[in-house]
Amino acid sequence: MNDFLEFKNVSKRFGTVQAVDNVSFSVKRGEFFSLLGPSGCGKTTLLRLMAGFEQPDNGSILLDGQDITQIPPNQRAVNTVFQNYALFPHLTVRENIAFGLRVARRPRQEIDAAVTEMLKLIQMEDKADQRPNQISGGQKQRVAIVRALINRPRVLLLDEPLAALDLKLRQRMLLELDLIHDQVGITFLYVTHDQGEAMSLSDRIAVMQGGKIEQIGIPAEVYEAPKTSFVASFIGDTNFVDGTVTALPMPNYCRVRVEGLGEILCYNDKQKAVGDRVNLSLRPEKFHVTLEQPQEDARLNVLRGKVENIIYAGNHTRFWVHIGERRIATYHQHRRYHLDEKPIRWEDEVWVWWDADSGYMLDDYAPLLEERGITPPPETIHSANGKEQRI
Image (spheres, rainbow, N blue to C red):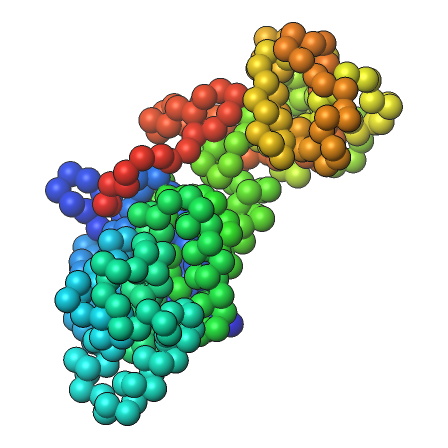
């Protein structure tokens, strides 16, 4: 795949708000690329700039090598799927899907064949003659997607397309949307504040905050190897641990003194020296919580703590463990029949242990979050919830 869609030094301001701040990135042909971030981060503005609904103050947008920055929306060969479906209530499913081709004055035989193909793609042949008020929310969204696809756009823009659906329906639509993308092979540019959607669907993700892109990578990369404190806190749950390097006990590893916790061993991928400050992201699922002390291992961090809180969630249990002066969030995955296990209870003394390779050094230092107005709970996460602001 080659670079197909390019944003080059794009900026956009609305009054005093810098919605997009000198953003550059590229999307490959046929890629499912997501813009992910909290309300007001600039992701929707980028989508509207791509659609031609807004004009950038600076920079350019290229589609397959052609500068489309000043081209009107109806000449860009891109279509948009909106959160609210935007179906015509007086038209049937078949007529809604056919609308774009009819506006383009395509031959009747071509329209009928294309509509039949799209109805088959979304498995709604039996709903073809029903109106939008007669079908479910998930079916409306499928109709909206194929209505946008029937003109064979070069890029499909999806603006929070699943936000109006309930959880179960949203989970099912994730699978269907992924299948549709695989079948049609068109480049998808997807906007969402839901990390689960982005992680499930995307070939790559651009994580945004404050009009800038914090990190671009495949889902596993942005989760396992976040570059900044914001990415680490926004994508999933994490524990931030900051300290000072005290020793380099073995190649590629360093020992870090953490105030209120003690000394821990971590993988030194940033090549820190003795005396350097470091900030680590420790994902809750990387920890083991046991009543028995683990066997000694040179690369294990083993600490003693007391269980402060427990939440049973079916497939896993969350423990908050007080260690020294710190409160650590952990997960325990139920890999075997849970009722056969000896239960860990509130106020139990437990061993908390993890491999030195499981922590990840961040490029920035945790207090930068407060400086930028981001205040996640110290032991868990910062996540985006609630109604999206359209910036």
